[in-house]
Length: 187
Length: 138
Image (cartoon, rainbow over all chains, first blue to last red; front, top):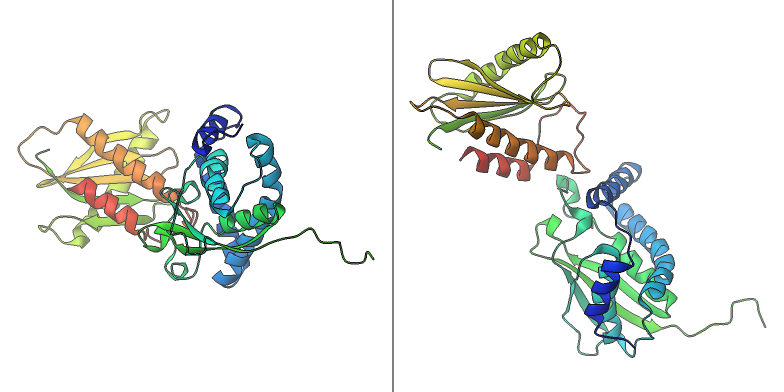
């Protein structure tokens, strides 16, 4: 039986999840971003690459998530949003973002993160401040994971504390539900 | 605390200056550059004199007319220098160690930034670090 999403998330975080050092995680992600900045000429490319990396993580992460949480199919997009915020983020990052700013047709919402473990200690260099979304990998993870449960979404950052804004906010937009499609090439 | 921090200086492992900040109005910046420079010599003496590398806190390095200079070296050979204006009070070692520990923490936060290159010879440019130094000095 599915209990309150928040409880389930906390319980799984306490019991079934292996822990590593937070600093190790933050420094690893930091060096990934620093290396990408050296490899690419402009920050738009870096953003895209981070999103692609996130996508690859997401399509695999969803299996782990479903195995650990055992949640049933979400009835509507609102349930999906709650599940992502209270169970998904809790299990993998240990944080609980808040779901806000629902659009009128319930197809868009915002995730506000109070603290972002990816960006501890980080200060963006001057020329990156206007263009780089440091935690863009999270957008890709959400897109990849939701695509595997037949939802096509667009996820993008709206504001980021590293850039000087007041809070870190991601906007998630449902584009459409994907139907099972016969792979091309079959009659 | 009834003494005031006049200057915080950070010297890199190749004895290159990383950060020298003057918090007082009584002396010019140049004087503190000079003080930091001479402190390097004294620190080197102390390190080479000791048989093994003992403590990170080096204590009072030397005193001038109205200034006292304290030193602290990390295991990665980064040196922190504090210049204090001498009032007529005994300055406790514990207070100094406290200040140095805070500087060390701020430095660790700086180095953890993936965009900071600890091997470069360039001076430290970071608003968060400046903010932390200002808080320590006041």
